[in-house]
Image 1 (tube, rainbow, N blue to C red):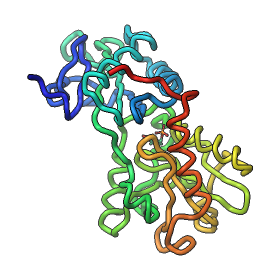
Image 2 (image 1 turned 120 degrees about the vertical axis):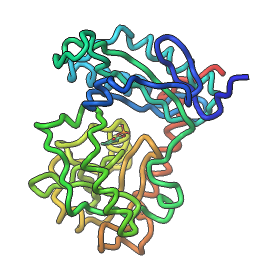
Image 3 (image 1 turned 90 degrees about the vertical axis):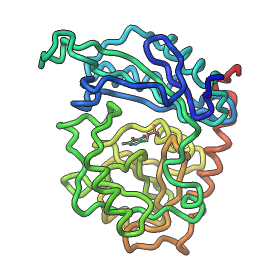
Image 4 (image 1 turned 60 degrees about the vertical axis):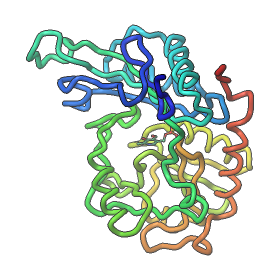
Length: 299
Ligand code: PLP
């Protein structure tokens, strides 16, 4: 019997076990990172904010001038079918649109490639390990790598241009930190590999509005902060302001709201998650079970 326990993929109209899903070595998605993707979480048997993720994926496709035949309804059906086939109740569900293989061998014209869609699901991935989130994540500000400028690669079209993050992650791990966040060339905090960054001072929460992916969890976080009576400012976040914050936290579809207890040498609170970040973390997991935001899966 076919084993879907590690996940399932949809490629070219077929559902395959995750290990059997492959793309061509000459696909520009691989050779030029000419690809966009999105990741929607499935929690307790339902998609969370599926329409928001589908809308962002469509915007990314348009920003990169990709052309795929699947409608949003087709994509929703495919995502549903792979998760149901894999039987996953908590899942990381990824959808991609790639430039594809040149239709005329050797062509260097991006208009002459066979764009294509594929998707896969695997068991839920925590971008920050739950143990680290529980004790407070340790965030390293990369010293050697700045976030790729937004007029070079558009960060709002979700992408795999992760060379800057990978450099930062090596630095973070080598220094005993959980993950990294990158500055822009003006010294403002942008984002990290898989998350947006927030600073709380008094009753005001600040998160960057430029040079970052507009995370769906960032949107949820902004709503949750306002529901708790906090003021939210989306604007440049200088590093000095992050280090001077009362609390720092991250937002990611892979784990929701993640409290930060250290940024470089700066230790927040008692080297433990702050009260507001902890409350937001709980709010997020509650919201993921709210029927108003969910699309249930029939297994
Ligand atoms: N920033 C980057 C670079 C990301 O890759 C991600 C998610 O993977 C995020 C931010 C957070 O976005 P979301 O909340 O939609 O997961």
